[in-house]
Amino acid sequence: MPDETFAHIGQSLSRFQSVLREGGATLDSFLKSNYLDRWHSDALLHVMAIRTSLVAGMQDYLIGMGLMNLERVQLSLLTDPLAHEVEHTPSLSYKGQPYVTTHSMIYSKLLACSHPRIPGVFVDSPNIRLEMASPDGSQRERYLVDFSQLDVEVRRNRGVQLDAYFDEPEEVGEILRQDLKTALRFFEGMFRAGLERVLQRNEADLAALGVALELPKDPFPIFEMDDGLKRYPQSEVEAGLGRETESPFFFVTGLLRENYDLLYPYLRRDGTRPALTGFPSHRIYNYDLCVKSIVRSTGEATPAREALSGGLREWLPEPMVARLLDHGILQNAPVFADGVIHNIEELGGYGPFLMVAHRRDAQGRSTFPDTFGGGLGIERALWGILRGPCIRYIEDVTCFGKNPDSQPIYLF
Image 1 (cartoon, helix red, strand yellow):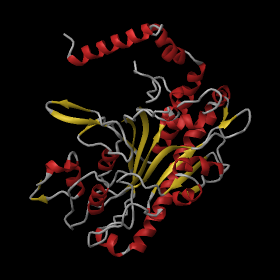
Image 2: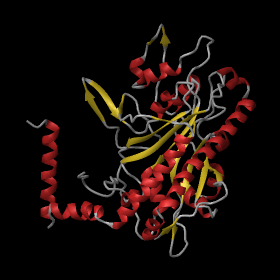
Image 3: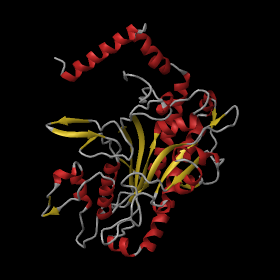
């Protein structure tokens, strides 16, 4: 006997088929126009060839840098809370225990870097983010609710402890500025490696899609978010800064975003901290990589869009908890004693993670890894470099693209 979910899906499909028939269409015609025509198109064939080269080139770079491949984590007690609004976080019950699906693997990546001899990890991670459909269809270009991400985390191995965090802001700040430069070079190298593989193998595919790929010899330009906001509204910063540079690829740094992206100095010894509102970009150690495509027939660039987001991470438990409180993710700090968390019910899925984060070695030093990382959306990156006469929407670079504004029901 089919279970309740199986039966419910069948009922939903029956209703959908009836609505199609009432509108003068059939399920067969819907499948042809929304799936089969795409699967049989030369455009998708060219995209898939380019995707294969791009991913292979980036993964070879990561392997060459000594990073280790991590398994996917699709089900956990804990997932990225995200700084932007989603409809809800999907969950399911297994053996009577509720689990949530993965928004991103940020916490899994951090924990996987625990061993001091692991230089870093990478994974083709799953991401399920139920973006809400926009009334004007403005999400149609670049959002998917189910997408792939090349997720990376790299150990910094600086070992800065809490006393230095509080008492040596100039010295610690200089370390963080150096590490930010290292992170930007690292991710530029990764993306370049993927693009170089595409240039080696896929010139005919690029030409067929009507786009050119130009890899600049100079380092990617770097813009600070606060400077961009002086010239452009928040929603237009990416495109505006893209018009200011000829490079099809550039970084934007210092975006106030997720709770785990490093702010420094932030927590003070007396427990106070500055308001998040107005926190300056030069004290926010994160970054976006933005990309433009080049239309082959005209040489014109499309508006720049973000393809990778990342940052240096909060690594000490005290500021980590402060950030969770100030972002409204936790209402109360964890209370540890005798190997247990006395208010674990108040912490949702964060209890086990925070207990690991609070561990000390025999000398009383925090053992949680200090890292930088990032996630490159594979479909977002492809859409970024391939927009042109053949590629308009992000689902155009996918077999099964699930855009929140595109279809009433996803059949595959």
